[in-house]
Length: 226
Image (tube, rainbow, N blue to C red; front, side, top):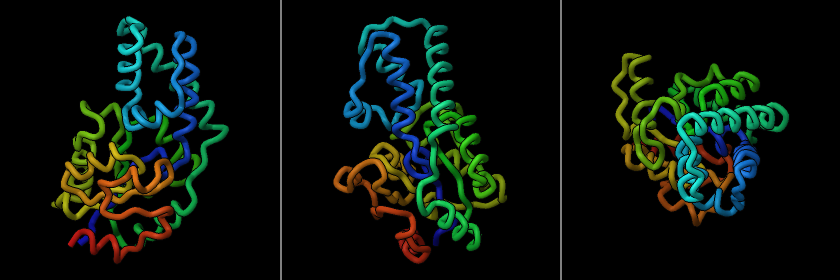
């Protein structure tokens, strides 16, 4: 039986994947590095900002110090904030889907590789923060997707809030990338993919694939958890 739904954020709740790419591209170009958009989507989209920055710095022999790395991450966050305030949009169907889950007393959480201030800024601006019982962000985990740590932490927070004992098998995860789907699967949860970012053929770990959350019914989610 379905008791909780855990959402990715970028590409699932809000249309910001391209904004993250633009922010990274701006920062890397100041360092003399070009990242084609195809490479970003193929290799890096599922990583946290820090994981991505470290990987690109290492592969391009940038030899940045920890202090410089932190500065670059802060600059990226500032660029992203400016872009998000002007351009971020909530994905069609999300508010109605969240309201449906809320009406049926289903716990909800977010686990994202994005930063907490970014997530809260967008959720509060859209009037959606109240739907979520907790938010787990990049700062709260040691290992990002495809490791299951973040999803398990989100469930732990839900159980603590409600003094409940919801099992991973009673949770559905909504993701837009294979990294997130693999993490959900590793956590013992039921991964559902949405084709906002990648085509269906690249979302194989999913137990169900939809083009829009309006296609996903409560009965279908209960069936996944049986």
